[in-house]
Length: 87
Picture 1 (cartoon, one colour):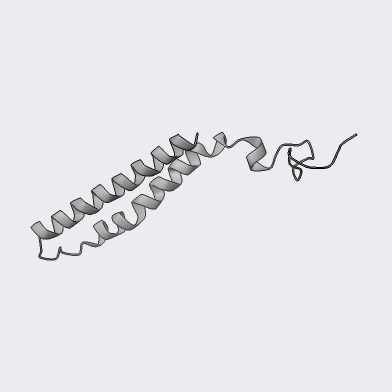
Picture 2 (tube, rainbow, N blue to C red):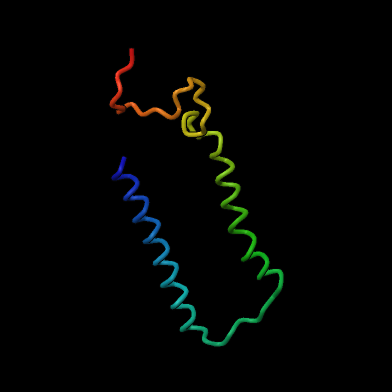
């Protein structure tokens, strides 16, 4: 499980570095500033958070009941590694 999380983290960082390198390359190729077009600015500002929100909302029902705090057995505060003896 830890290996898959590490792999996912490395993949995310690699993708971010690739995008950064592509932006640097584009900046060297087109050094003159781009014209500010309001609808493009709003699209760049709003679309990524909306897509992230949609992705989170689509996975929201997959949260386990225990993680969401709805276990219902009343033992939410106790650990299975507790040192006290139960009768």
